[in-house]
Length: 83
Image 1 (cartoon, rainbow, N blue to C red):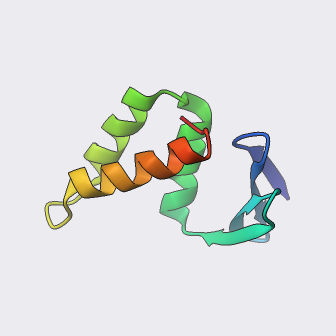
Image 2: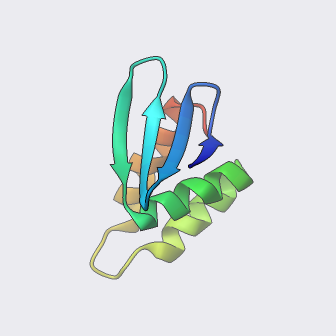
C-alpha cells in the first residue's frame, strides 16, 4: 500500500491495484481512475497554478471545452488549498 499526502487533510491511497482519495475531515472517499491518479500526483509534485493549468489544457481533447474543465478543476483544487 502506498500513501500520498496532497494536503494536511487529503490523502491518496493505492492498494491492490485500486486508488482512492480520502478527505480526513469529512470522511469522503473516492475511487480514482488511472488518469485522475496521474493528475493528482502531478499536482502533488508541482503545486503551481500555472503548471496545473498547462497540464489540464494539454490533456483536453478537441471534443471537450478546456476552459470549462479548467475552471471547474482549478476551483475544486483551490477550495482544498491544493494549488
